[in-house]
Length: 241
View 1 (tube, helix red, strand yellow):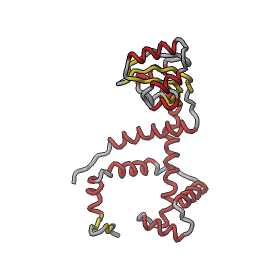
View 2 (cartoon, one colour):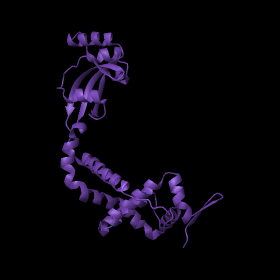
View 3 (cartoon, one colour):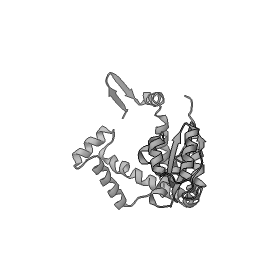
View 4 (tube, helix red, strand yellow):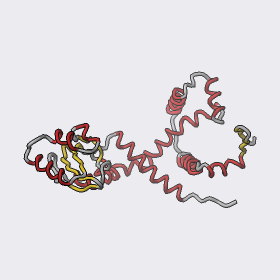
């Protein structure tokens, strides 16, 4: 059966889909989904897993009755018989990620750990080097608290928190600031340092080492998968008519 869709006065048929995907820059998304289908074709799920996936799909879109499922499927250009396949697709993808990249997870974590570690630090920033020097000497002499000086003099949003920032991952701050924090000991106060347009005074309060827990594992699996996917997309050949 020939495929066509009526959108206002425009009829979109099979022959016009490819040019439209190209025009609207949707072709990479289509190719991504095709690559995923090819990669997960041999991944198997149990009947229990399939039933659970279908239930999650129906719950997500509030498809409590067969009529609602049929109506939703029609709206998506599907049939009710397609729903189990659509429902189980995310599960098959997660199984593919674990099977393909799980064995490299620990080594990749060690490679990424330096940027995943979190820090809490105190920060004062100003564009006046003279003020920065004065504040630094006052902090060295313990004349006043860091929080008090930050509230009074820092020119960034950290002024609202008494200079306190974090916890944030070490890949979040400016690279120069991240480098300073990565080699700091808790309580270490850095003298005024030029970072971009600012002169900053920073003190590391706490280092929170990253751990390979469930959340980090999933994040890293996704990173490895996306790297692999980009390689697959770059290898796609577009054939001229």
